[in-house]
Image 1 (cartoon, rainbow, N blue to C red):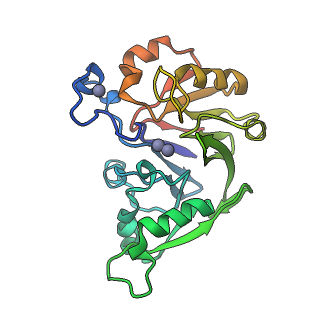
Image 2: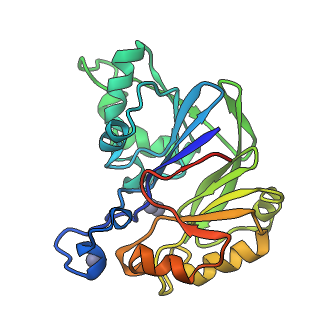
Length: 253
Ligand SMILES: [Zn+2]
Ligand SMILES: [Zn+2]
Ligand SMILES: [Zn+2]
């Protein structure tokens, strides 16, 4: 299995439009963060978790020629706004795109992409085949996904565990049941927005506390704001088994 970080930035991305802070002006490529998403390549199949507003650019950058399914964590726009561009895969693969998400996510997609679900559709619309997921494990093309329910203020969000790899973005609380499901995970991806407290995301200290509890072999932090600081500076402060993810980073769990 291979994981590619397509984007590691918070909802506004980094740099932020109009901001002149040192992170937004940084020339380090690791300080350029598109909206958060990963590509999973497993058993000859390719999946993305979330399709944010940068989805098209991410697919071009990573030269993704085939996409077997989209899996959603939650329905915030920074995770769903790029879904229309799966049209490219509809054309190439001559098939509908399987889309997996909780009932709440699918309901939101039917509103945001209403034109794709009307009876008389216009030619060229994205062709989506929605699959509802609950808390139970599900499998796509023989690859099994275990949902990891977490809370994002008052919104339920799904993380996902695939074998020894676990992915959690947009959380500020991990319930005890989900902590149990994370037992034995070797590679953990966890959101850490900034240093200051935040109402709906873990900050750096909180994320490091979770890492202490779960003790994965290695943790990559994602969904990062310009307020976290320069990538190079933050890296120096982190424990050996924790890194900031960056766009384009590839991991083979
Ligand atoms: Zn987000
Ligand atoms: Zn900035
Ligand atoms: Zn969110």
